[in-house]
Image 1: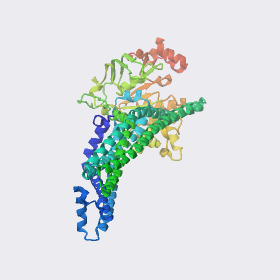
Image 2 (image 1 turned 120 degrees about the vertical axis):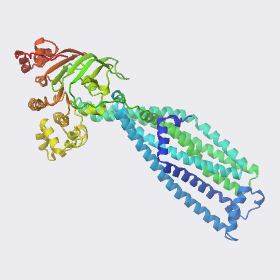
Image 3 (image 1 turned 90 degrees about the horizontal axis):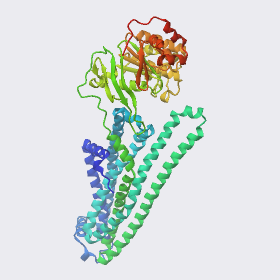
Image 4 (image 1 turned 90 degrees about the vertical axis):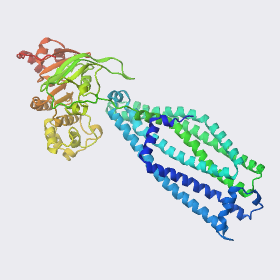
Length: 617
């Protein structure tokens, strides 16, 4: 079995963290050594203690150098006080060892806790900075399980490594003392220990396979837990509670069954190890008698061997524990190794303002990933969002509208073509600056678990309460918030579950309006609003249209009636573009969509004069 500690990003983090805490790391090493030496000496003092207790028993001729050195300790005690002094030394060494072990445990736990915090923080940071597509194509349950459950399992692995180091120190000290007492008998012990370890190796491969299965089962269970809350409304609406419960129970049982198999394999290894160690102990006794080792020395040797065996066992158990955590370690290591998405060339620009609008020039984009069909979401799209104007983007579901916004925010970069601002490719702009010029309100208002005030203020760091209220009024949500007992300090619940869809959308819209930056994107931001509230929001947008560039992604075409231009997408391509009146008269895609929605008001635009200079791509 190979642990490959040095090749794993997790272990590289572990050793790097140790170098970041040199004094704590050095303290662990020193305390482990002192603990081992004190424990070894306290047991070794049994030799002079037993020799003096039983009057030597003719053992003097058989005493070796080590036993003679221990007996020198008694010369300082004076006649008649030897047993008292040796007994006191044994108690003092045990007390010293216990104190050292206590401090060592505190320091080790501090380091392992610090490293585990760093690991979870790094994984969280990596997920925030990795290519957005990675997050999209991986199940939420998998990532949540990795960030929570598997990260804690990796912490257990780190704690196990500290225990392994302590056990190795103990084994080294006790083995050295055993060698000093009887090298012949020690060689027999080493051979027997090697046999036991070799026998238990057969269990490692099975545990490794079960570890990978356990991680997969835990990810599936986490995904079911995510669905419990994210799909709660749908589950109850369709009466699928029993189906959801069965799916959760199956995932839970699978994880339980794998865990039980791991327990059976690990328990079987422990049982076999105990039996073999008992056999070894008996063999050592017979070999000691055959070698003519004296009674006191043999008893001390056996006592030392008895103290050594738990540490040898702990080394084997630590090895098996690391094997059983192999799946978790691999998962965490993979997340630690995630490379942050590189947004630019290192020479990013920060223009003074958005002056000439955003232009897409023959832009194509294809999603990729294990669960996504390789197809173009956009196919050589060319269009322009003029500065200070309102542009509506319409089309059937799957036409490419959301992809257009994802590329605008640089969640992805185009597969081909270019997107420019003021004639400068977005890749040459500083990403933080560029996104600071954008604000978005979507159909799925992504609210954080906090108060209404905190959710609106999320759009602008350091926003004043007056600014928050002004944005809420523009989004037609201020009156509703004011009617609540706690007003803006009302908590919205996880993902805004305590609010209606329309209320969530208006709060999300207020958050976007608070930013008041160059480009405002409304991605189906009014589809949950009633007609009256929608009209109020549109009047607010009218006041902003000369101050901001507004992009409206719309299924409800009532929101497009005041747009300066409409761009209709179909199958990832621009089907038509122009003013609402032009497109209504053309009888194309936009006109058909209006007819299907039976919007008489919009159809009336065809009776109005067409702008003398219609906008084009």
